[in-house]
Image (cartoon, rainbow, N blue to C red; front, side, top):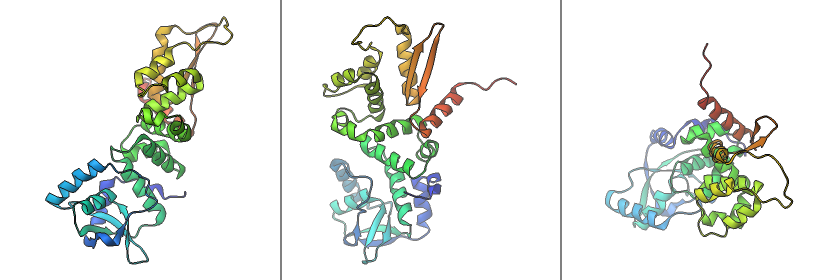
Length: 284
C-alpha cells in the first residue's frame, strides 16, 4: 500500500466537518452500496437495532460520506453503520455527502473511522493498525491520530504479526484484549508449556498470564544457575506490559543485565518514548 498519510493528522469529526462544506444530498438507499474492501467485517446486530430505533425517532443526524461510482451508484466511504441501520428503520433515503477521494485515501479514512470506535474486536483492530503501519505510518503517528498510547499500538501490532496462531490456537475466543494476547505471545516464546495450560481454560485473564510469567519454567535438565529474586519478577512483568515488548533480566556475577527486545522500529520508538516520559530531564 502506498498511501498519503497526511490524513492521519485529522480526526473523523474533522474529516466530516470539512466534507459538510460540499453540501448534503438525500440519496436513495437502493443506490448506495458498501465497500467490499471495508476493514470492518462484523456489525453487532443488537447495536445496529438500537441505532435503527434512534433513527426511527430522530432521523439520521449525521450524513454519511460516499463516492460516486461509474454505474450511477454510490460507494460508502464513511458511515456504513448508519446506512445499515437506516435500512432496518425502513427509510428510503439517507443524507449523504458526495466526495471525490482517491482509492488509497478511501482505505485510510475507513481505517481511521473504524479504529475510533470502541466496539471493534481485537482481531479487527490489530489488522487495521497493521494496515496503517504497512502504509508507512509510524507507531507515533498512528497513536496520535487515534488518541491512543504507543503501547496500545504496540499490543495490536504484536497480535497482527501472529494473527494466524492467535486464531488457530483459540486464543481469540478466550480473550478479546490485545494486551492479554500480546502477553500470551511473549510467554509463548519463554514457556510454551505454560501457554498450552492457559489455553485449556475457557477464559484467559490478565492475572492468569501474569502468574504464568512469574512461575519458574521447569528445566528438562536441572542446572545450577543464578536467578533474580522472586520479588523482582512481577516488576519485570509490569515493565514488559507497560512497554509492550519482552523484557528479560539476566543475572550476572555482580548485579544483572536488563534486555528489552523490540520486534520492530515502531516498538523501539514506543520504548524510547516511554523511557523519555518516565525519566526526568537532568538538571542544568
